Amino acid sequence: MSMEQRRKGFTLIELLVVIAIIAILAAILFPVFSRAREQARKSACLSNSKQIGTALVMYVQDWDETFPAWTPPCAGAAPGLFWTEQLMPYLKNKDIFRCPSAPKVRQEQAWWNFSYCYPIKYGRPENSVNSNYGYHEIIKNYWNCLGKNTSKLVSIVAPSETVVIADCKDDILGPYIRDINTGINVDVALANAGGTPGQTLPGLICSCLPQITDLNRALDALARHSGGSNIIFADGHAKWYKGDQIRSKRDGGSLRLCMPDILE
Image (cartoon, rainbow, N blue to C red; front, side, top):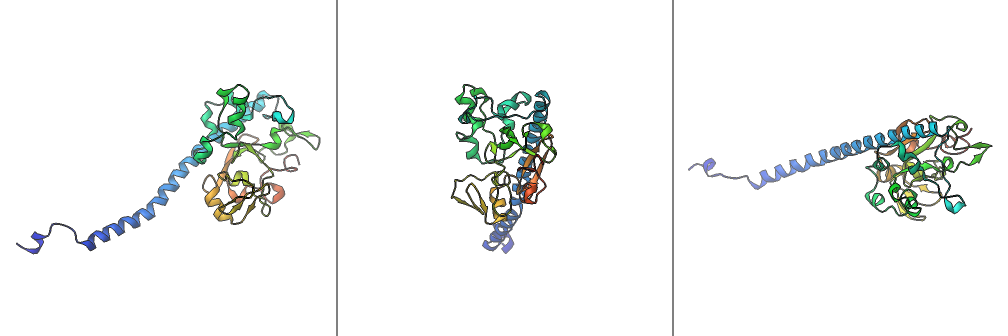
């Protein structure tokens, strides 16, 4: 019997070569598959954002060019509807307020979110939703700034540049939660960041005045969609922005997030 006839399997070297090739292919393809999955989630979130933007425009048209506004009861106001509740009649379902790329723990443990606990507390459990999008705090509070009501469309100088709703770590967007050096809005640019004041996250020191210590690392670890976030503007359109672009005009950006940019 010849040598070739007696040989029935692979040699150890041949097996190691095959395993090495598979490992190399996996190392190449897995990141590609991961990016493809995130691109699909990013597109789903942008679809949600566009639907929310359309609902926002319809609400403004129905309510005398006024954006949803709400003051928390702790400020002495009556317990009115939260912004998510005000937009619900214009949307198909509550799942639109959920971003598929938001951290799972923040989706399921939402006791700290107004959109979740506030309706339950005031007898409207059917309106409870854990929103992964934040509503602009200045517009929500209808502050009287420069003699103008910030919840009125007519007061906003450039609706197509003014941020109203965005991917956000909370359901209220803090316009002044900015990196002390770059002016990047951390609430939006790093929407998947949790943390408490004083806590250190990848590339970020959490506080009321957060500090980004390593922008690339922070965007890679804490940004929600491929290093950026989806943003909804006062005219209803929605668009993805890279994290380092998410800053107000006063900080050298192209967006209107802070005063006086909104009413300038």
